[in-house]
Every structure is written in structure tokens, then in C-alpha cells.
Length: 381
Image (cartoon, rainbow, N blue to C red; front, side, top):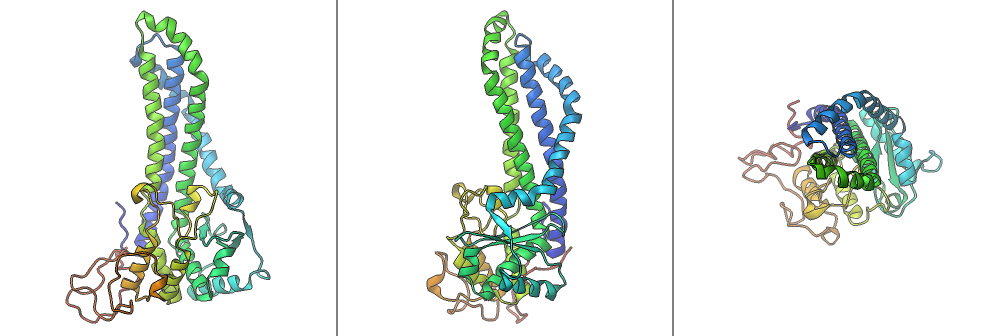
């Protein structure tokens, strides 16, 4: 759903996803609110049948929906207003002046001037790890943060490629989508934890009322509580599904965008290879790591990975952007890359016309010399 075939269709798809995520937040919070009223009615009226408890819970739910809606809207507003400060507090990121980092400012400004883009704010994270991320919901909030470790380990061309990668996330509105997804997951986790705290504090009260009333033949309270717990668990799982359903193709597109901005696929490849295995920001929540250029937290059997593996991204850059591996000894463990012995594609693509990660065929099946395909793929938006 919302498959993107080029830059503009990708941006449009991200805008649609952002709206749906925000709407999904309200729906999940309403679901949590009903689970709470169901639990409350089960505790207070443990001798009633489950259908009557559910109807009374529905009546109570209608009464609190306006307040829940206002509270959720307040949460979204606060997140839009203060998310950057929260992220900075968690990661230790801080603003940096041009006098302290002239190299970083010059590289970013040159990229922005070349494309007529507004220059985002720059921040530094004092850490030896190699990583970077972009945040913001509006042009005035857009910020790129990089670690001191990355600046020390990468040369100018590689740092420029990383900055171009993050600029592409801003340009494609990926940062908006990821911030909204983090807000949704954070809100659901908060309300779910609050609900379970209420459940734990009320367990003794429920046990004492059940001992006298349920023997009279009610027993619906147990079923109602099981339903309430199932609803809260479903809401929490859905919030996770929302996050993991975000397409990992955004990283391939950002790599391609970096090549488009810098005209230097080799720098993007070497930057990724240096970052690989050295990008874990200790103590940083998963919602923020998902915004980074590399997120090594892959989850069980790579099912919950938010980023493609570095070797897959390098392979795509070699195969579709004409990049070269700087030194085979530096390459991460990977399957053999297609192309010439020196690691660079020479002339024609695969005879079958393989499909690249950016959503188009990587050449003509007849092997005609048409030049390397553009990193954005065919434009259908």
C-alpha cells in the first residue's frame, strides 16, 4: 500500500502515512479508554453478566471520550512543540556554532546551496560511536545531529555523504513520519503502562469482591477483565506494528538521494562501511535509533529491523549507482556483489533487468547502453 515509484510519490505517500498514523493514535487511545471503563465496571460490579458490564462500560466510555480526545490532542501538540528538546535530552545532542565546527557548516551549506534547500540547524553528540540523524516537523525545526566520533572517523567526502543522506530524509519528509510514529508509540506505551498500574493496584479489591459476589452466579467480571487486558495488549501490539510497518525503502532512497546530491557514490559506500558495527548509541530509545543513518538493533531474525543491512545498502549502491568498494578487506561480511572484478558495474545491467531498491528496473533486458539508472527510479508521481 502507498508504494512509491519516485521522489514525489514517496513524499506524497509519507504525507498520507503521517495523517493515518495521527488518526490511528486517536483510535488506539479510544480503544484503551474503553478497556479502562470495562475494567472499572468489572471491578465495581463483579456479580453482573459480561454483556451488561460491557454495555455499562460503553456508556461510561462515551462520557470520557471528549476528555480523552482533548488529552490526546494535547499530547500531539506538546510532541510537535517540544520533541526536539526531548530528543536532545535523551541523546545529549547540543547546538554547535560555526566557529566550533566550520568544516561541518561549510559541507552542509554547500549541499543546501547546490539544491536551493533551506539550511537545517546543526547539533553535535559527544560520543565515540558513528551515527547521525535528522529530526523536525517543520522547516524551522529541521535539525541534523552528528556524533563527534563520526566527524573524527570520516573524511570530508564521507561526512558530506552522510549529511546528504540526512538532507534527503528531510526532503522526502521521512523525518516527519518517524517523529509522528514515535509520538504514537510513546503515547500508547504511556497509557498502556498507566492502565496496568491501575490493574495491579486494584487486584486485591477485585479479589475480595469476587469472593462474595461471584458465588451468586455472576462471574462475568472475570471475562470482562480478560477482554479489557486483551484490548490493551492489542492496542500496544498495533502501535508496534505501526512502527515496523514503515517501509525500510526510505534508507535506500536516502542513500540514493545522497548520491544525487554529491555525485559521489563511493563516498556513501565508504561512509556506510566505516559506520557499520560502530553505530549503537547506548541508552537511546528505539524510537530515536530508528531515525539514525544506521540502526543495529535488528530484532528477532531481522523481522523487526527498521533499517536494511549495511551490506544490502552497499550492494545497492554498487549495483545501481555505479559505486566502487574502496578496498575488499574493508567490506562487511556480505554475499558476492554483482559486477566487474574491481567491484564496479561495467556497462550493461543483468540480462533479466533486476528491480532495484528504488522501485524501477535497473536497465533494459536487451543490454543496450542506456547509462546507469537514476537513483530515484522512474517518476510516476
